[in-house]
Every structure is written in structure tokens, then in C-alpha cells.
Image (tube, rainbow, N blue to C red; front, side, top):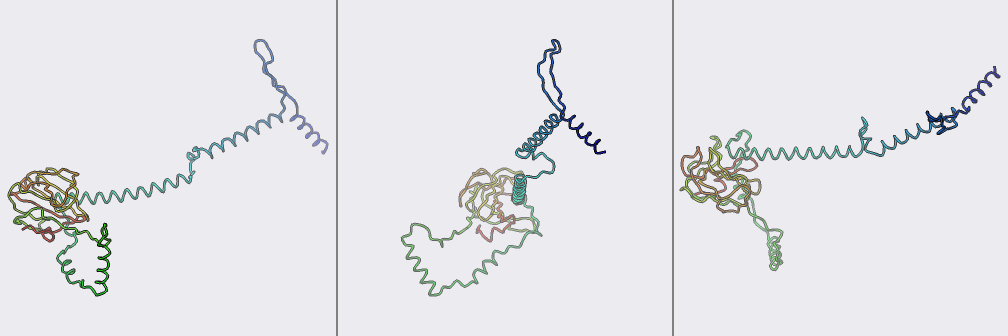
Length: 289
């Protein structure tokens, strides 16, 4: 039994190492062009090495080139970082879109006069004024001495002191008789001031003209955006003196009062004030008479 196994091993080895000649001949002349001496072992070795090289080259190409991103289920660090950045960007865009939609809604409400009274918070400016008047602003001797010392230091200072405060006041757009007051229950979020036709209408404060055009119901309309999210609206003008995008200053003439639009019953100014999308009674901040 052992002799037969030994013979089988020798015969297997002999078959693997047996030499064969691989010859390329010219079919017409039978001239030998190329010849190799090969064995089964040589062929197996060459095929194995070629397969290893091919597998290694394929792995290197996939792992070191962007081709790896096309492998299903593969998730690179760069792709994860890009996905996270895109998520943050999408959230920012959604937030900005929400703010823009809210701003557009406030402009639309200012033009149409349609406001949900249930969502409108109560604003009592006079109550805030009374509360301020009740506060005690008296100073003690130490405070007076400190104020005097600071004033002496700033006598020759070319720059404004840190304590300088900017006052935000509203300039009357015009003066006249109020023919219809502010009445939210009747969806009249403005005051109508009766004036002669072509009376100059002035900007109540510095700001940017965000709308200056003709509408069928309210005629020539101007809307100005001011500081502190305040918007002023001027309707039924006879003509306009500004265009959309213009920068205006407090007291600058922006148009001339008239009676344009189907909702107008005579020469007057329909004036509105809006803050953060909610109407304010203009007579609490401006004297029209």
C-alpha cells in the first residue's frame, strides 16, 4: 500500500514537472516564430501570481481612488462630513425661509389690512409710559460726583462717550384733522388724516423704501422699513417722490397726499405703523394735529 502511494506521489510530481513546449508557427511556411518550455507547475505558478497581482491592483485602485464611493454601502468620512454640512445648511435655509415668509406676510398684511385679531398681542404704549414715569431716577451724591468726574474727562475727548444713546423718534408724516382713527375691531389698522390735495407726505424716520407702486384699492402706496423692525405705510397718495430701494431720512418728502384708489373718499393720508408684523396705533407715537 505504501509503495503504491509512493508511486502515485512520484507520478504526480513527474506530471507537474514534465516539460512541454509551447510553439508558435507560421501557418504558411511552418517557420517557428516563438517557443517556450513549460510545465504544469510553471503554468500554475504564473496563473497564481497573475491572479494575486490583479487582485492587489484592483484593491489599490478602489481604495485609493474615488471609485470606492460607488461601492454600495460604503460611507467615507468626507461624505459624512459633507452630509452633516448640508444638513446644517438646510436648517439655516429653512430658518431663513421662515423669516422671509413671516416678513412677506407682514408686508401683505400692511397692504391688505387683514390681521388676525386673536393672534395680535395687546400693546399699551401709554401704560408703558406711565410705568416709566413711576420709576425713581433720582441720583445719590456719589453718582453725582462720578458724573462730574466723567464729564471733566470727556471735555477734550474727540470721540463720543460709551454712554451716548441713540434716540429713536418718529417725525409726523403731515399735520391735519384725523377723519378716522385706529380701530382694530373694524380692521382699520391706521389713521386717516384729512389734508388738502398735494400736501407733502414725509418719512417718519430714516429707512429703506421697500415698496413704491400703484394699487387698485389704495392708489399710490409707499412702504418704508425702519430700525427696530418698524414699518410705516402711506396710502392714497396723489403721486410719489421715491422709488423702491431708495434710502430716505426722517422728514424727507416721499410723496404728495391725494385721493387715489377705489377705497378713497377724499384727499387724505391713510397712515399705518407695523412692528414685528403687528399694527400699532400711530396716535400713541405721533401728533397729527
